[in-house]
Image (tube, rainbow, N blue to C red; front, side, top):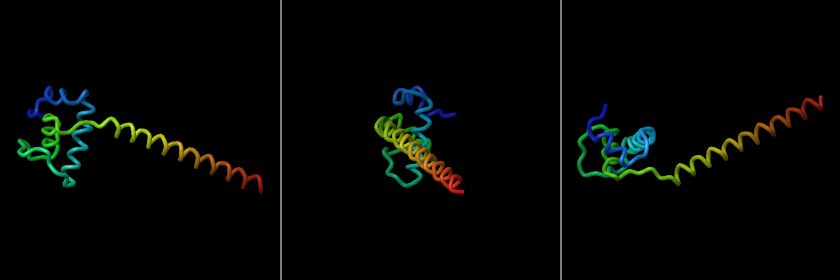
Length: 99
């Protein structure tokens, strides 16, 4: 359970607990990967705590455009997979008919 920053302060910056957990996780991974830290001083020694502190301070926000881009990319990927499966089915049917 986190005590600092408070969940109330965090939810002022992010609209749901789910979004908060995803955002904090993503930012913690960035910190672990060596991305620049956004605050001069942190209370927490751990990357997740540091990510939460950055969120509470308003330094880290959800980018709605990146969410839409990700969803669109997933849709395109599903469509491409369906096309490939359909093409494979057609080729399989042709090979069965040739025999």
